[in-house]
Length: 545
Ligand SMILES: *[C@@H]1O[C@H](CO)[C@@H](O)[C@H](O)[C@H]1NC(C)=O
Ligand SMILES: *[C@@H]1O[C@H](CO)[C@@H](O)[C@H](O)[C@H]1NC(C)=O
Ligand SMILES: *[C@@H]1O[C@H](CO)[C@@H](O)[C@H](O)[C@H]1NC(C)=O
Ligand SMILES: *[C@@H]1O[C@H](CO)[C@@H](O)[C@H](O)[C@H]1NC(C)=O
Ligand SMILES: *[C@@H]1O[C@H](CO)[C@@H](O)[C@H](O)[C@H]1NC(C)=O
Ligand SMILES: *[C@@H]1O[C@H](CO)[C@@H](O)[C@H](O)[C@H]1NC(C)=O
Ligand SMILES: *[C@@H]1O[C@H](CO)[C@@H](O)[C@H](O)[C@H]1NC(C)=O
Image 1 (cartoon, rainbow, N blue to C red):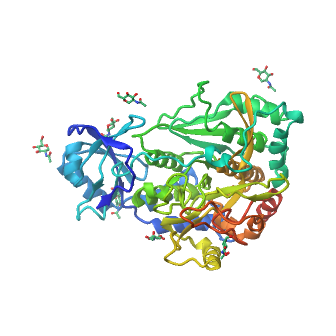
Image 2: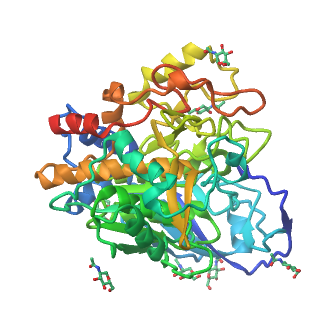
Image 3: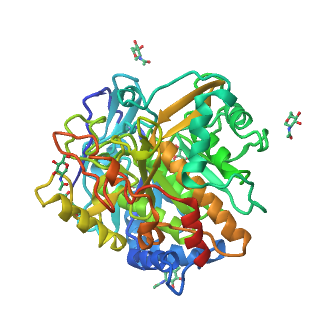
């Protein structure tokens, strides 16, 4: 039995149409996930004989062979569909996700469900969902999950410093004077100085760096160009980005409501000195962000020439997604890793346990999908109050997954942390789970919104974009030198943990929930991971690969 884990206080049941057609997706059992994971670690772990041998478009069938359902699974599911007069269409080229349309009454009968129409009382948005469902004993080994069923539209982690962060001494919003003399430049250029990021355009430009957006979020081209003219007048002021559209995603340039991803795209453009940029825009599907994540990830898996570096921001509470869907999505990120893509996510304005989204922190949640072990999770740092040094951001998201167990690459550092703080199985977080973040970077950045300059806006979306920009530049150097890109970064990061600027000295803890917080410690901790990156030190490591 699968039960809804969501909070639906804000939802009212309105009507139930038994003939309403549901567009359901079924996750079929994948053949050999450990084979896929072995391949990912083989091609991503420096020192392995397969390091850098990412699977090309021509070798996609190797990836698909791991995740495809077995013939027995396919025949059993097809026979069951046929006996119910239903048809399916594959949603991935491996066939591990299939789409099936059926009426509410059929779905209720086949999955012991009770689909209703729920309306959000604030937005009037309606969705068809059930509070529970089950898969019959005979099919349970073949069908892992049905979606969307028990997963409700979720509130996203806050991305930009808003009222919460503004109580922090540092997160101020100022309408700045012209850049040459203002403090705003002070905050843009030091990111390059702080991390040693080169300011000269890479030659030749050899890769693509993409910002991923969902639900038709967009990046405003005019503001990105204004940002470059203002802060990077040495770069092409007409820089733009390619649109990669998934689920009919658009790049809406409406003047009202500046694109929420403008700051990410402007930082990406300003820090990567002319590397071609792309914006992956995924449209709205069934009012369900997790379907959109799945569609984007599966699109990238089978894309002939996917961008080599991708940044995605805006996490959700992990408890809002069913473990089956979370695992399936994470398997898609593992396939992305096998293709040699560096997928980088932020951990949000979150603190310990996620008090800004649920003051009770029940459960004590970590930000998802950053908890997937096959993506790189970036937390936050900030300037000290005298603007002279970098310190941990107390709002930085971090914690431990309740769905994903600790990956091997964390087997030394995470237990060391747990021992240091005296964590036990009765701690409110899951001591056997994947710990995040992996590292951290500056949250404070300057941006331009509808022509107005804002400084010191803090968010881990900035952190993730800054780190991803560094990876895009390093990847460019490697590809231009005829070497493979950097792919899935975590094995490399954990082999070179001493490379990062450890933030423990400057901090105490992350924002508490119910009195529980994470201490910053020497080495890895769930506030800033290993600390912040240095371009030159990462470059030395990459040169030796
Ligand atoms: C599974 O089915 C495919 C296509 O029908 C066939 O080529 C393949 O040999 C089958 N594999 C097994 C293990 O039966
Ligand atoms: C499937 O369709 C056939 C022919 O229209 C009908 O006789 C049968 O009852 C249907 N079966 C189900 C399970 O709906
Ligand atoms: C399900 O319905 C949608 C329209 O809502 C349609 O586009 C799609 O092709 C249908 N899929 C199947 C498998 O019948
Ligand atoms: C929701 O619907 C009610 C009743 O039709 C209406 O008064 C209200 O303005 C709507 N709210 C929104 C956010 O559209
Ligand atoms: C940027 O575009 C404008 C308008 O098309 C053009 O006048 C200008 O020369 C371009 N600048 C550069 C550096 O290409
Ligand atoms: C801890 O994580 C593991 C996965 O590693 C999971 O199986 C287990 O249920 C989680 N425990 C709690 C208490 O959440
Ligand atoms: C964690 O931090 C708190 C408050 O700073 C301190 O009292 C406690 O001793 C620390 N625990 C460890 C194990 O460092």
